[in-house]
Every structure is written in structure tokens, then in C-alpha cells.
Length: 87
Image (tube, rainbow, N blue to C red):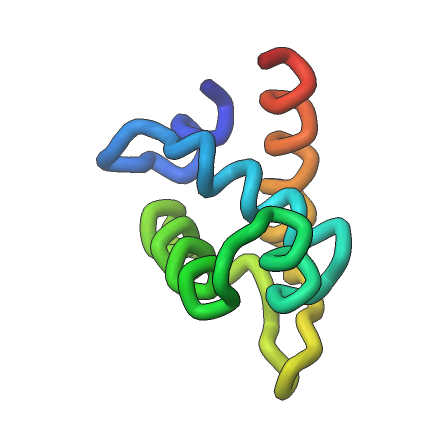
């Protein structure tokens, strides 16, 4: 997968992380995404941090409770949408 090659990931891509990230990016809120996904906010936040660690990049700048997607986040979001659409 392009995303694994781009970020030289040591572990295989976790599709749950990819899906969670896409939902967070679309609603721009961990709390709202947690409601959509039926997860707790702390669980979803931990999953996002794990995904960022796997990629070795920051996907969102956190400004209090607000999220702002980074340039790398935009690139990953494009890949995520493509991968999810193909799946």
C-alpha cells in the first residue's frame, strides 16, 4: 500500500486506525467521532495517538478541544479515503 511505503511503517497498516482517522477528520472532533463510531473518547484518542505513532507523523494540531488537520494529515486522509473506497 502507498501509505505503508510513504511512511515506512514497521507494522502492517491497521484498517481500524485508518477508518477512525477518516471519521475524526470528517467531523473534526474526537468527541463527535466517538459518538459516530460508538466508542469512548479516551479509547478513540488512544487509537489516534497509536496511528500517529505508527506513521511517525502528527495528523492533527490540537488546540484545546479543537482539531486542525496538518498537511501530513491531509495527505493521509486522501490515502485513507482511497483505500477505504477500494475495500
